[in-house]
Image 1 (cartoon, rainbow, N blue to C red):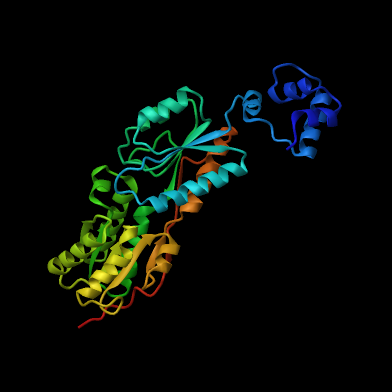
Image 2: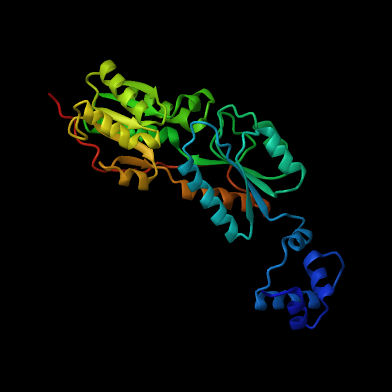
Length: 336
């Protein structure tokens, strides 16, 4: 490992001069600074985080705020986290992960103690109680998700309303006239989680526009719950032939449950979903789906944040257009 004394020897200066070049605590000539910086680059020296912070008045740390509340599908959340960490490292930043349900207190703690330079906030609610604090902080932030009132904030997300619409439009285009949404766990809707609410809005709007009979069913993420909701759907909507799933763990259990009730997928029932591509492809009957671009969202959130830290102007709102991939779970309605 290259040490500060190695840099000093290579640049022909004292170790204290290298330290001053890094920290800016004392003035040194421009020629000396450039010589030190050239030696740092050539030797591949990585300054101690404390020295970098002194030089830049920054911690080189970003906070990623992901409250692990009930109803959250952790594997998908971790895809976001990995993308954020990987992208942040390309910008020589580390990531502090805040997973507790601390709300404003957690944000205030890291901001007041200068632990982080900026924040990425997830699990956004329509009426998120953290918004006033985020607007008042002197550190930049980016939200992965859109609250109902996003003025003064920088937000990025998949266009979940359009994603819900796209799933229904595909089913309508295949001739299906009775559809249902098997949605997130009930507590996700009770909290007013923005992305889940917008899927419902898009699903309902597209069903109404196409004059389809439709219903929405929140569902716990468990096989027993999948079996119960499948049975309930067929009792309430005997003519059901199209289902949209926005609950990743239920894809395989729902297909099993419907088949146990005598419905073949896609011969009798077509299924679309909003989920990561790799999950849709791995199900026993590969599912037609709108991709959840977790890696892209995480990476672009970091890029927005780094631009803000660099004093650049960024768009207030970034909505990614949904992309639907046809797979084996959808087919034209088998009309009687």
